[in-house]
Image (cartoon, rainbow over all chains, first blue to last red; front, side, top):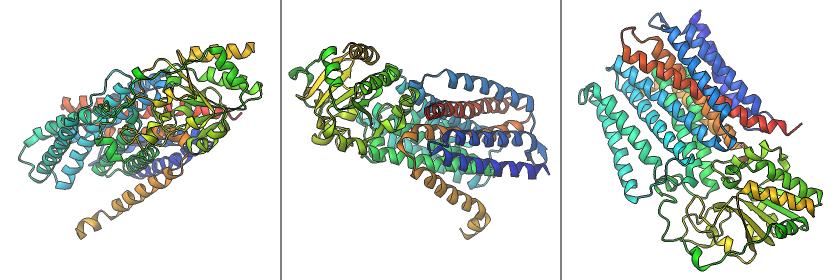
Length: 463
Length: 100
């Protein structure tokens, strides 16, 4: 009977994951979808604790399990509730790393308890360990990078080192599976160390602009690691949940790469944004960007017919989404048509800007995606770029030497004029110069995005 | 080869159908929902916690390494699940508010 209840719960869990994921892909049902999946997860967890049996033995150590769950729940809840909207990508990366670590530990404990078995069993255990560890250490590096605690280190030798390390992991794994006696029990620690190191070195040289792709990729890695756990225990809910995330995550990763017009291989091997100095043309020294005063900027916008706002990471950092919405409302009061032109990878994650602007109650129809925004640029009078840089860089279209060449960008230079809100003339996250700032139609408005927007709204009130 | 296939037939079915399902579900997602979706998927792979519970639940009471690691695995898995779902919910809450 308990076996039946367990399998039934797993079936329910699997279905809720599929339905939940499906609902998550439409704005109207997304929130319900998340709750549906969470409910399914709860059912599967409770059923495991009460009904799971292995060789006739029920689950033991229940007080300890419940204690671990209680502690995890409190910490997880607290972290998730406290985190600022701007730090969301890091948070996702962090939780992803926790899942990876969990998968790796399962393999370690399982191997220590049963070091012998068929090749299939060993392969499952070792793959779960390797993928879980890479996902853990990689996610932690991505977390550190997005939090700006870890700097990029771009070095071309890392690419070769990584390939060699990856080959070594596969060799150790292969030998451990097919000739188990070679390493003895210590193989599990060797694999753990190699995989952790690989995760670090794999993410290290990848530039910040590509971090969304990396997080998505690591997300699908953890999915796969969970699926190997499913193989290990012949556990259907782990299997379906893990594979679902593994495949969905891979597709999402590819979609993101497409949005940047690059291949996944290019992102991983291409050490983007690390070096790049050689091809960055037009040093800031010999070109002068024109500044515009607040009053002039306010007047330009107030008497425009159509204004586009291009948000970027600067908006997120300055927490300027609310005041940005304020500006938009003020302009509309003055009869200006306002829309937001959203680049798919603006910010640090796809959809990052949408989440932020949604927080500030900006209505959906005002958020225009890149493909629809670009044709509108020629009829737009003023583009206000708020803390975006690489996604409005003309070099992506006209400088084949630029590291971002070929990436689709918002063609703000097609508009009649552009006002760029920026803290300083520093290069963007990809570490390259932006020719846009020196175009005759472009004016710069220096300062913190929130502060500047606030003053701009003030000026508009006085007009 | 044929033996392996016949023995694991149902698993192979589950794997392939799940892969196709994952691709199908993601393919027509608007870019607006990429972040919440990634976050939601992140919470779902927290299902790995079930493996942690099994490992912990069947660890021998004198195997302190297994007990310690098992405890840690359950804790980290819970972080993934709870944190993942709560963060996703927070993101989506903001989408909902606006419609009213």
